[in-house]
Length: 149
Image (tube, rainbow, N blue to C red; front, side):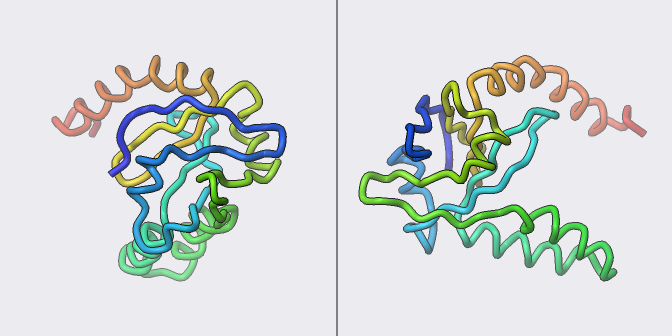
């Protein structure tokens, strides 16, 4: 399980040190990390997980999207920009520039646990998400109680 927030940076060579606790939580192909650009609450960041989690996502898409176009859209969303990055001996992954730019990691990189995955985001992105979380929780609570229908 991925828990906690770890403050780091992308070095001049584009390498991100992944916290040892997060590396230990990876299943199966622990020598790699799957990273894909995404947004949380409208804020650009990177979603990170292991290969097994991506395999689970594919299985869920196959079960929940019976129509070819639905599968295509969900598949493209999950897999088109995902990259499998290999760890070096120091527990770092070399981030492609496109991922660094997407998440604006030039000023720092926070690895933020989210249970079954973790996110890499800039300090500003994390602050924006933390500011938005109370309203998002309230909206989820209202929807769960039938207020969102």
